[in-house]
Length: 418
Image (cartoon, rainbow, N blue to C red; front, side, top):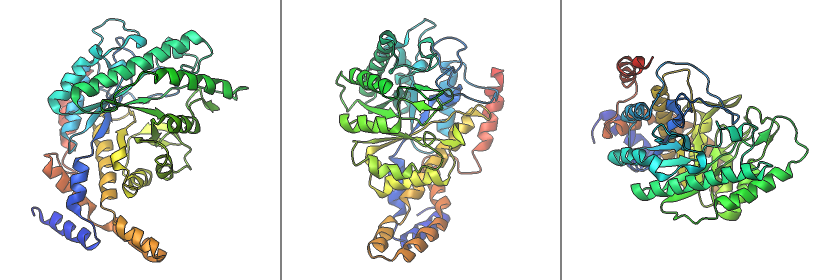
């Protein structure tokens, strides 16, 4: 057994009944999906110079060096992935296709527009995930898409979602890795609506049409993402958690839980075991809301650790897909990817290293004081030494050694972008 600190960590965890080697093996086999939109502030490449518009979301900050082209975005992702241990995935939005400078309407996106992404991912052994884009478009300017009163507007967005499912399935087939295609819409009202039911009835009807075409689940899985509120949709969100949970349970779709999409006093961790009793799988969007869904970089904090602890404790890891969902334009964007992903991995590793079997035994025996003591004492076990070993095995820099690479990349690459 190689480095001495890791040997001591193995012994310390072993004394608590935890197999550190098994935890490392599971961590290595669990990819996280990096959000492509962190690299360019959710602008996409649908049209030159595009910026995020509408949808109740916004990016703050003007840190220099954001990606301006597909080539720059992939270059930045390569740099981030080099500094993150293990093999991950990349999550795409529909506006990140290679449109060749031509105007391609959202309802016309096709697998050919993502052939470059497929080739890029294949050459690196990566998986991809996908999302329809229901914002930054004239037909979303009034805040409604799949639940719109106008049937022609609804039809446009239904066609967009159908096209995106086909893109997701084609990517999954080409890569031999299942794609999760996640559907989120911004629909909602700034002030209290007189009719809450009508938009939700229209949304349900639209979703029925979106999902009417069967897709091979080996290639693509559908997920539905709720939101509590957004800017311009503070009082009413059509696609609430309750709406999507009911729809997903009825139609056996994945449910997406975004850590920034619930009230600050809600525990997303507490939802995990409930929803997975009724839906086939879970998509986690790890994010960090500060007072609102502000999508800050993921920390190794209690909400992140708690939700991954529940996934591991319940034996749900095989039914859970984990992605990142934040966009911070105020700091180095490549560093944002690296910091958030490494923190998410550490949180998952901590969950895998928890003496959960012993905790359950103590709970079953009614010794709750011992359960509490072990829960707290396990927090000081040498997680860092196991993490360092994970980095070493995957050829990634350890903590406190990777940031100089960010500074070098900023000096040599990002600063030239102006």
